[in-house]
Structures are given as C-alpha cells and as structure tokens.
Image 1 (cartoon, rainbow, N blue to C red):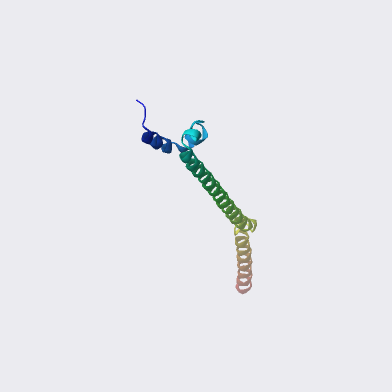
Image 2 (tube, helix red, strand yellow):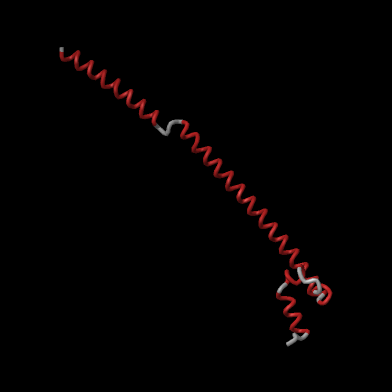
Length: 109
C-alpha cells in the first residue's frame, strides 16, 4: 500500500539524518524538509562539538587539580611523614634520661 503525500511528509520528518545524508532522492522530492534537516544536522553537530570542547576543558581542569594535589602530597612525603619529629623527640628523651641518671648518681654518692 502506497503512502499518501501527507504520510510521506511525516515519514520524511522522522528520519532526518538518514534521509538528508543517505537518500539521494530525498532532496529532490522533499526540498523543504531537506533544508530543515540540513539545518538541524548542522546545529546538532555544532552542539556536539561544543559539548566535546567543554568536556575536554573540564577534563584538563580535573587533571590539573589532581596534579596540584599530588604535588602537595609530594612535599609532605619529602619531609618524611613526621618520622624526623619522632627521632628528635627520642634523642631529647635519651638526653633527659642520661642527665637524670647523672644527677641521681651524684646525689647517691
């Protein structure tokens, strides 16, 4: 059963990309729909390109933030993660204990 002219226009508007890019007769049989489809395809491609650029910019910002965070963690690790502080506390503790032992020894005699 053949489609009427009104049905053909409805079918033509439903498959924009295929009709306007693949079907060679579409441009001659439906010039108004073809022009609208070409404009729609151009806008869709521009929107896709804009989104891709935004996603790439967002990814670059995220990567820069990760690198900065890693750099910050790197400086803390370079300081020894606080081990040096405990070494100093241990040395001071040994010195205090030695001095206390010396005083006890002096007073005991």
